[in-house]
Amino acid sequence: MYAVIKTGGKQYRVTPGESLKVETIVANVGDTISFSEVLMVADGEAITIGAPIVTGAIVKAEVTAHGRGDKIRIIKHRRRKHYHKEMGHRQNYTAITITEIVA
Image 1 (tube, rainbow, N blue to C red):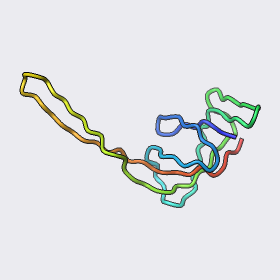
Image 2 (tube, helix red, strand yellow):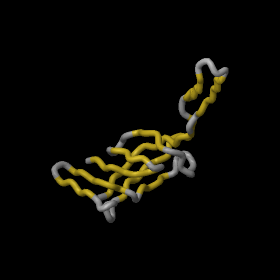
Image 3 (cartoon, rainbow, N blue to C red):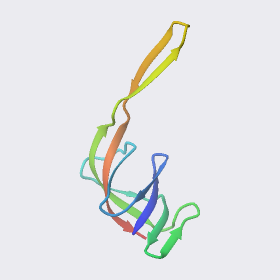
Image 4 (spheres, rainbow, N blue to C red):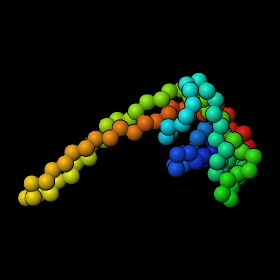
């Protein structure tokens, strides 16, 4: 069984027991959260596709950690123009573990 959920402007294909990093969610470590924006649920041959979301479907997850991703370096350079600029960015994330998919 798997589902496709939408959170933080992105879509994720999730299965029970899977761990993933999503955009920051305001919750404490150990809290149980639920995603109601479920776009698709597949259970074997039975596939339910929402228009745009599946009514009554919920994906439950447990917050395992909060953190920051790897640094991304942004470099802007114009040759022969004496222009060089460097920046860095680290995106915040919330690590979750999918516990249950309720269709």
